[in-house]
Every structure is written in structure tokens, then in C-alpha cells.
Image (cartoon, rainbow, N blue to C red; front, top):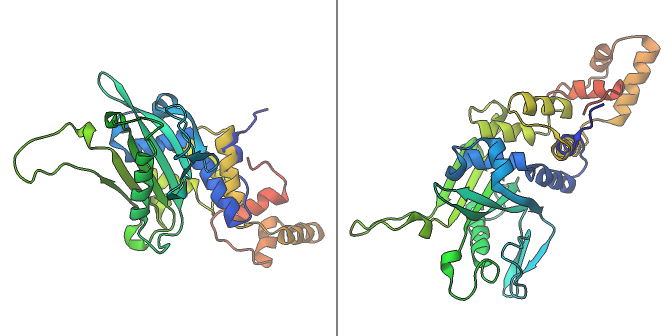
Length: 315
């Protein structure tokens, strides 16, 4: 008997928006998903396989909105990465997901810090890009006392803040845009080493209503992964067969949570009515759903009811 990995189980639950948001963070923090995001949105990893990135370039376990870092009081070992950055003189910043990654170069490697945020509200009262720049700036300033001390600014690590916008306006849908520090010669032709200034990158990945049909692999994968309409069984099959994403225990569990927490997609009363009608009339489930006017949207809703009625394994 095969045991579902955690990723597979997390593709199966849902109830309120808070739980849904937490489920999204858990599923996005899976290394294979982070590797997909890194490969398809960051130049540093574009030439590497997703599996190679997940296995070799993501260090440790990503932190998910839980640990506290008080920058003005703590100076722990170099990479005591935590998902919350607190300063006496600045407001607390809680990162959805934050982790350290290795950047491969021809003869050496360097470290960088990556933050991933899931954002549903594209108009929270300020431009999302400015919040992304602020988060990235905090990841730069918080390196003092943890990554470097005194005036050793040469030890600063590059930071990336990646924002996955699930409900962007139509004009931003199905886009991936990177905002970076670049060198511009006002006079003369001097070129500095890019590593000295390429220290901040903010990336906005905007999904869309038709994201599941997108030609851009990353947008299509994330649209399916975070969809509230596709039932767990179908979602897992698509992720495995089309994108080669193995259903580990963590990932499968996360996919389940996102689906089930989406908004209580299956009504228990309707299930009971369907079972009673089938038992008393002998009609098949499709005819009973037609009579009870069970919606045909979102997609796969009726299949989900069938799974529940016949108590089959939707994992």
C-alpha cells in the first residue's frame, strides 16, 4: 500500500481564508515547488534542472511565518534565517517563506537569501512592488550582525523577494516581471563587477483567470497548484504527469489542504440528499445531480461529489 507523501496530503482540505492562506504557504515552501519558481524566474538557475536545484541549491528547510528574529538584540551564527524580522526602530516584518540558496558559478559558489510571498489582494492600498522593495531592503539591512559585522560590506549576500499574485488585474495577468539594480553609465564606459551591485531583485509573478491554459510553464503550474476548483486527485495527477512533480508526503498534504480549505466546496447536506435519492429511486448519480441541480462549475465539482458519495480515495 502506497503512503501519500506530505505534499500529496496537503493538496486535499479547506474552510476559511486564514487556513487557506496558511495552506498556500505550506505548499509553496515545498522544495520542488521553490525550485520550479527559481528555475523559471531567476537567471541564476535557468540552466539547471528543477530536481538539481531542489537537491543541491536550496539549503536547509525554508522558514514559514513562525520564527522571530530581533535584529537589534540578536547576532547569532551567520545564517540563523528566520521568517520574522523585528527591529526596535522599525515595524515587524513577517516573511511568508524565507530560505538560503547557493548560487553556482564557474569556479565557486555564493549564497543568496530568497523570500517568497503569496499575495491575493493586488490593491491593498499601496503598490505591491514597493512592498517587495521594502522586504528586500529589510533582508539586506538585517544581514548586519548575522552575515557581516563592522564595515565588511563585501560579505553582503544578494536578496530576492518573489511575489506570487493570485488575483491580479487583467492588465497584469499572466506576466512575470523582475525589478533589479542595474548599472547605467552617465559618462564614460567603466564597467563594475556585477556582483558588487546586483544585490536586490524583486519579482512579481502574476497569475490569471486563464492561467491554467498559459503557455508559460511556471504560471500554468502555479495556477493549477493554487487552484480552488480542481479536486485533489485530478490536481495531483496533472502535477505529476504534466510537470513531473513527485507527490511527496508534504506536497500531497499541502495540495489537499488548499483544495479542501478553498471554501468548503462540497456541501454535506447535498451529499446526503444524493445518497437518499439514489437509494430510493435506483437512479444513477448523474441523473440525481441533474434533478438536484448540483452546479457543473467550478470544474470537477461533480466528480468531487462522486468521490465523496462512493467514499473512494481521492488522494
